Every structure is written in C-alpha cells, then in structure tokens.
Length: 142
Image (cartoon, rainbow, N blue to C red):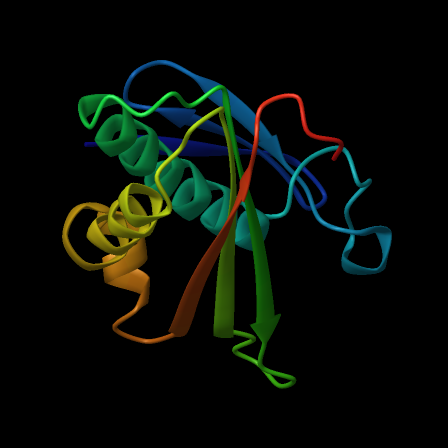
C-alpha cells in the first residue's frame, strides 16, 4: 500500500492513495492554512471509522441480519501538549433494521474491534478505545 502527499501552499496538501483517490488536507488559518480541507488527524479518525464500519456491515450481512443503515460516530480526545496524540477514542455504532438481533450486533462490533479492523487494532496499541452500539428499529422515530 502506498500514498503520496503533495504540498500545495501554506498548510494545504493533496493526498493521493495508491488506488488513485485524492483528498485535500489543510490546516486552520492560525496554522497558516485556509481551512480548505480535512485535518490530517481527522483523516485518522475517518479511516478508523470507515474500517470498523466496513467490518461490522460485512459481519452483519454474512449473519443475514436485516440491516438498513449503519452510522459510526467517532469521538476522540487529544493530549494538550505536543505531540497532540489521541488519548481516548470512543466509537458509537447506530445500526438500523427491523428484527436485528442485539447479540449479532454486539458480536460484530466485538469482532471488528478485536480481530478484523486493522486501523482500530493498530491505534489501540497506543490509545484507549471504547465501543458501544444502539439498535434503531426500522420505521422507528430517530
């Protein structure tokens, strides 16, 4: 796997993945950026959230669960002083569907966290990561 990051100006960069997809990264004005793109540390959270969402959906589909939606909310705390590493990350899954088995959802979240999500497992070596979930019944008010 490879990536290429090209400086544009100020604190702006364009990152290109090995698969040919690009994303703009930028910093806030107080750091010389123009706030034109996502912050690099936000990219880490998005990558981890996408990785675990992929796993959970894959596991639930294989278990023939009637999933109609899955949202993953990731919240992180960072150290006050440089390097401002993540100290705590919480991952909250909101899984929707009619007749979802709570046991299957819990197992999918656990398997992703402990066995399949390479991003979560890698980050957990240095960061406290917690997970929880909620199930929204199809047609329920949200």
